[in-house]
Length: 319
Image 1 (cartoon, rainbow, N blue to C red):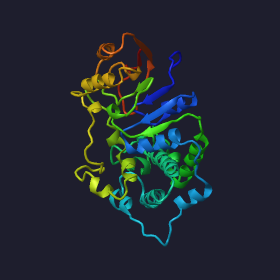
Image 2 (cartoon, rainbow, N blue to C red):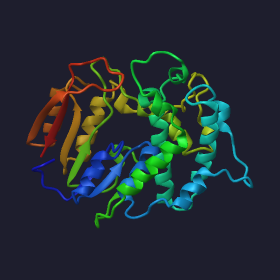
Image 3 (cartoon, helix red, strand yellow):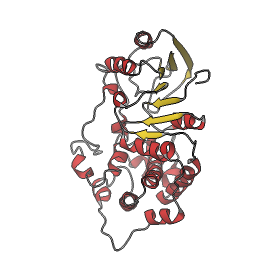
Image 4 (cartoon, rainbow, N blue to C red):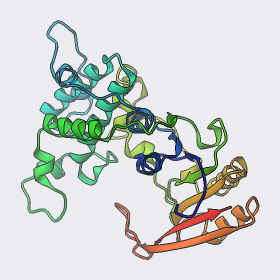
């Protein structure tokens, strides 16, 4: 975003928080937004949080099973043989419930962040899109993945990610915040809005992050998780929550509304050259609210599970 002059920015589809964190490091007033609750907690831990870190005693509290408390066993009961081993599931049940008992919002967010990263790194493809524990446990020759990482104990991964998160916390001395809204409903105005929506390929097949990471959404809603499960599917995702951004019949209109909502801001859109809407459609839509539209193309980029090698990263800047 070199050459653009702005003080405040909205990261409308914040995801992992890497763009928001970069902007925070460059002394911008940042609002991180994501409609997934687990991602919002990442933003809370690393963007909004100015100084709070997890102490050694906090870590011990999270990892220790309190014999005087009663613990649920929903993960061990429901997800046996699906994502993690039985021993790992029992560990997750304990830690998920202990994290929920932390009193400080930022400490809780850091602990969840570390737990999310530990869960993701131990998964084939880093996703929860299918029942495939066998890919980790089968004694076969492997052409992908890192079995050493998969077999590393959860506790070791968790502590490593807590250390990383603690080191990443800093005070920019500017007000940054993390919110959890539909991108069209974020309150306030911003000098710049960064837009990195879920991708729809030329065949209309989209990336449904709610389905890919439903397990993490469940972890932070542990008490209500059993009522939200879709029992008809083998990997037990959460019910519902389809997005216009993963529907080829709705995404064009969704971009149109998004550009209109933030017409007074500099618009920066990250997409792919072969997506829906097509590049020319996005340029035309942006021109409705911005007199100047710059397009930048970058090298080929292959997404996880993607078989398309022709796609290039596309950046549109409307001012």
